[in-house]
Image (cartoon, rainbow, N blue to C red; front, side, top):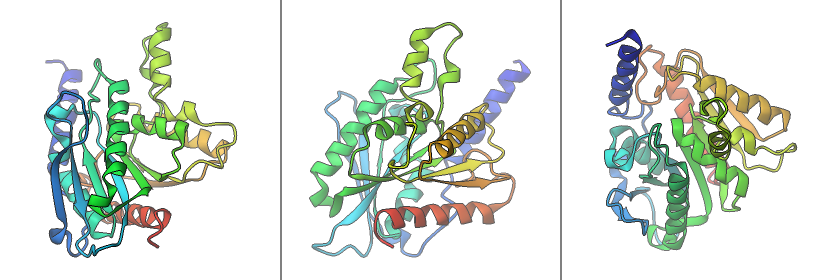
Length: 286
């Protein structure tokens, strides 16, 4: 096996280890969160396209709470990312912070398959299902935040383009916000396809009316070119006067919110805590 292959395998093993750990920041009553699991949210014939809903422990009738929808990164639904310890703990954390948390599996997978159009369709179906059934979850379907991790950032692009009024804020944890560089040289069709899912290409000249967005950066991200792409988005968003907030973890690796291999856990906790505050503020809880 070559050194390059060894490196790829090491990163894959490291990422698998990270998602098997809970989020580094905890709140009281996370163990009292109620979970409604394995809801079939889509009409697509795929048994792994499922949704879990996490309800705050202090939820009382007839109140409605705002919602945070999670978008996982590049693992197909057959790997059941909604059941990873990382996302289960994030669901409990957000619910303990007073919001309804929603985690669903979608069809995006690593190259060469990608399936971005299919995954975007799954996101649309998940949001539609959530809003149609909001009453049964005591959720406010008109007050939704969306949080994406890693390659799940590509699915934020349709929301930036369409700007649905019910989506009040976006959060991007070490997310891919420009994937145009992955198009093979001279392949115009591939470039068009990837541009359609690159958030940087969706920004208008004046982006001041976009929904607020929090961008979380891992200063030592071990995914090649990810920070280059994220930094391009930040520069373009600032030039367009977009309402963005950027938080950087100088020593953080990919997945630092659940597994900090460099030991600066306090900074990881600060960022997770601040991201919860960002959601609460823009979803009208604070």
